[in-house]
Amino acid sequence: MRPGEGGRPDVCRQLLGQLPGCEGLEPELRAALRYFGLDEAGLERAALLLPRHFELNYEGLRRLLAEYVREALEAFSAGQGRYCELSVPAPPVFAQALRLSAGGGLRFGSRALALQVLLRAVLLSRRPLGGQEGPGPRCGLNLMRRRLLCPPFEPPELVLQFGLLCGDCIRACEGLPGRAAVLDLCLNGEAGRDFAWLASRFEGFGAEAARALGIRAPGPDELRAASKLAAAGLRLQSRLLELNARPDRRPLRGTGLSLAQTAQLMCFAEPERALAALELLCRELEDAPAAEPGRTRLYCFYAPLTLPELELGFYERGYDLLGSAAFLYGFRQLGTGLGGLSAAWLKAMGLAGPPEELCRAAAREARRSGCRACLSGGFACPMGGAGGAYSRVLEEEYGLPVRELDYDFWCERRAGQDIC
Image (cartoon, rainbow, N blue to C red; front, side, top):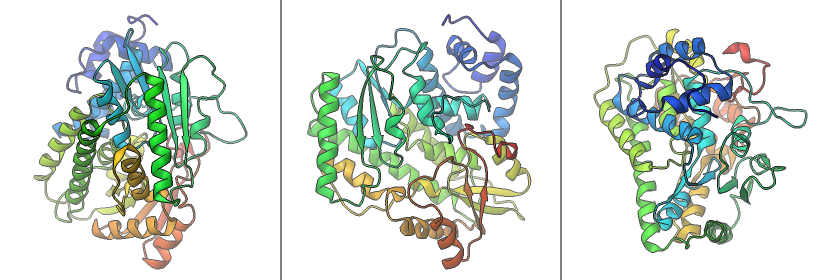
């Protein structure tokens, strides 16, 4: 793909100029426009709507969004060197320990997720990626990862797929022999297994990944540094939720909150920059304006990051979207080594645990945040095992009404998309 194709340079600058450090990515953005079949009018519209969809007055949010965009557009760069793609979600410590062990020259990332944020949340494309097999819709995140293995992209050297919440995850790259090496670890529904068994599976998968990449397995120094990064991220996420729950302050809008929380799923090539952006955002939120009277707070399962116009509709009608239940953790057990740290993370993930526990944790958070009702829906298939228990527990046990929207977070099905 030739860098000069697709999109006027001035329109590209109009969009990228709003995101710190992205000004030099015009060739990559033009390539992305051509690849996804987007025109100049659509790009101009996206540039004009970006400050309406995201609170760009927060510098921390601008910087964080720029990290996603850089990560996504790097897929369109030529000669990018060695790269390893990870599925979502993956243990935060896993990729960073491998990255540090490699000692440079090998990048790790979650480009499929970053590309979805670029395509849906920034460029506002609603055209399905397509390529589904079988009768029902498939997750757009998995479809995007599959696309990364096909021309015009330079395929990753290795794809690490963690089937932790969704059985479809590890099928995403099937049937593409020779494009990239793919390693799978399927633990869907296994989070309740013995801790030692889970730790052993993660440990073995880490050793297998290190061998495939030709690097040594992470040692104590790399594990300490990776754990420090992961712990810093969790502290910032906890602080973000505390700041956003204050009844006397205006909360961060749903798209910005969702973008910040989704950073927990991302493997950034340079995670320190993303952490710095989150830290700055938290500092800015400490001085957030006073809450506006007469507004209603709704607690979300996952605020519609990839459909910012949906969040804008709620916001303009006096509703603030808070949350999200998809990112609730409850730490129960400590672990050591790559396997133990990864197993502890999986055990702590609300989505991977008993559905009733997740629902009760969501109810507590909704109450703490001053939410009067809950908002659910948005995915082609249930995330985790919550399913119908989510609405039942919140309504019957906690008196919180639940409203479910019929839309597809990843824009892969047309039924119900008029809600956007």
